[in-house]
Image (cartoon, rainbow, N blue to C red; front, side):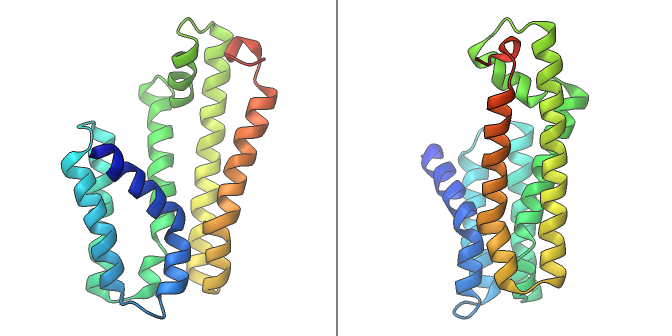
Length: 181
């Protein structure tokens, strides 16, 4: 059940900008908040008991209350900023408290990662931190000063394209010491 809820949350996150774009003409903010909040509540109740996972669910639940209480469609546009901020916090805290997230992922396929691979994965984690910072700032700027269509285009397509490009470039330049070709 928790995998299904996780999958639904991922799908809802990907489709969220388009739902907001289309739904602002058809639904009240509280209806969005209720649906998204229900998914996050289910995640909090059935998800893993890791501090980061529970923290994200609780922050998302608090966020979901805001559009309903304030009754503002503009509040709905802050969700991608929240997600980027959380990802920045997750990746950034892994640099401080270690091991970096990219190193953890690299060790799945290569448990005995050499020092050069560890240094490389740390740099890649730092690059992801910069990406999440820039992505969140861009989404915030679009939320505050751009038409809904621009916000939807960026948060629904462009940001995912940039993520994919970052993944692809990193995979191409990844040295053998970090599990590359």
